[in-house]
Image (cartoon, rainbow, N blue to C red; front, side, top):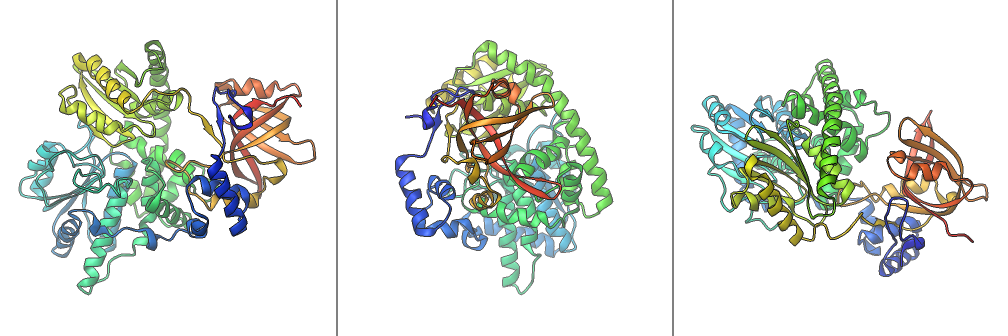
Length: 582
């Protein structure tokens, strides 16, 4: 039975409440712990036992951080790194051009800087060089360096690593590994095929952080002291959120602690970026994923590939401010390019049909720097894996995004092994590919077939899962702060959603082109402010603005709105449905 009898909402979704067994667990938790019932609903849905509730609400990194040596090649990687530091060897860091790559590089550069050492940063150009190490770049770096550390890339780079003659290579990565590994000193990757998979949810920056933990441990055993690693967690948090790694296990503790470090505003690059992003409150996962992350990515997408990494490692406020302003400008350009490509991709995908296991589009000259973002938009709109490809000459370069439960990276890698792609790889939720133009249709047909076997395309718009009901009078700042203790929320740990049943809309105001601000209440004096972003991009806007006195069930996420030093509860509306007549 649908929650509040909502079988088809304004956005076409069925509302789903707590499973009866989960509801019973939540009730028992509330009785045993005295925690607020809405918070217990959230914890029970996450599978937290009543006895473990308090520990879950206060995760300690020391309890959750895995032993770095549980990852293969870790001791060798750290030992070779320390050897280079001790003997003042020349070190190069070869990084991917996204937030995870930039953060990974900045972690190493920051650590080395605190030890009085420097390293060369190399980030490949997305258009001219593509993703990951390439033979000319690696050969050139090897001529001038003793050690090359590849971060957020390198696991599949057999040829380019072999080209690094005369230098040792260490790979710190998290992308899906192949049957064989490149010949180098170490490949530390929780997604190697010979790993257990227990740490498969780590992003590359978390892998780099664990290597630094191991390096500090080896230094201590030799009677030396390494830098304070806790101050580096802002970078790990940023990468974890921006790379859409699931916020479970140690990732949750890394992000939670990293947000505290970031709030201290000690890192010039992040301070400058926060200021240019007009952040006016303590950072949270939304800020990392939607304000800071896209700006750091903008350099790799349409501008200078290494700009994001350089900003994150920057020690000088004025220099950081200049780079942050440049990234902000590039991000605005990126949005304009993205909007053009998105309109064309959506039209093409709709013509092809949005009910297949795979939604895809390909266009002449589409900028490689925005195809991943457009793929993400298509995925969100259709609840299906999506691939968007920019064609140039005889080839197309594309990016894909997946939905929960469908491993896109493995399917892309399978296509590459079958010869339908020139190259391709990634992880479960995101992947990149290069395809010959004359193989495009065959490759996408085969990819659709592989994804269908994993269950892609079996459902329509995703059901809206709700964590219970609240009355307007119960929506307080204190309650929201209690619920936030179950966070941080993001990939793999969706923010709790609550329904406010049978409420009256008392005020509406259109904001800009597509947003709607409103106030609702229960008729007993309690009122809640709400915002519905993109309301007029769906039937929601017209339905709520033209309520004509009708009553509604409203569903969304509670948040604290800070304005003029005052905090008030606010509902970010995601869906609505007419309330049944009394």
